[in-house]
Image (cartoon, protein in one colour):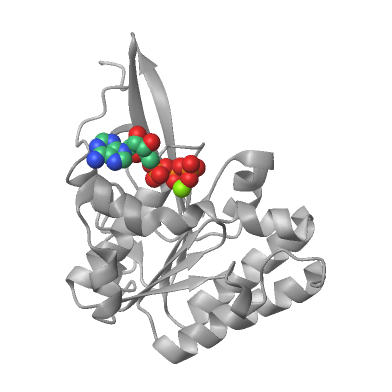
Length: 244
Ligand SMILES: Nc1ncnc2c1ncn2[C@@H]1O[C@H](COP(=O)(O)OP(=O)(O)OP(=O)(O)O)[C@@H](O)[C@H]1O
Ligand SMILES: [Mg+2]
């Protein structure tokens, strides 16, 4: 029988997804969201943080590349979410590792091993300082480009996941499918949500499914993922099931 004293669940903030996960993420776990470019990873993570701030939780967004910096502008134009205001209110903190003042940017002076150590240290010190409830990393590819080793990236990611678990922070980590990084990073994660696109006739439809969630059952269906001006949501019925 399933243990009824299972840990607290955390809402993903994405309507329909908590049901698929049987109540949301487990608190203090590392959760990967992966998919090709444009499948909705950044929106997913931003909505996860936004949900936390609505409840007064503290949230942190770790930015790893130049492109990821436009998240504030994109969330405003896409959904009218004011992340600048959340920062002013102390509910959201950005940690931008490309910021030269943190000395973590890709640079000839920094050896990959140094970057790995500094990234982990930086994340841990920011968690100690701010005690966030939720963290979103957007995304892992830039770390790989800086480290240039799959093995080292895997070790780094696993270490960072342990930091999150130790501090009881619930995290979402975006991973693109470039270089097969998604496959590799998914091994160490407590849960994996896959975003994609399927063609239905001449239409392109967004799709979502749960690849795994450790310690829980889940709805094992590919469902439709919708993005509208109100954000992202999952349709309750799967159109992909064969009729009995
Ligand atoms: N208000 C909106 N209504 C409908 N779709 C939207 C809206 N805002 C954004 N989108 C869609 O969401 C897509 C972007 O999603 P997102 O940036 O989260 O993808 P991503 O997986 O992070 O991509 P990348 O790998 O390039 O970082 C846009 O390309 C657009 O199609
Ligand atoms: Mg993105």
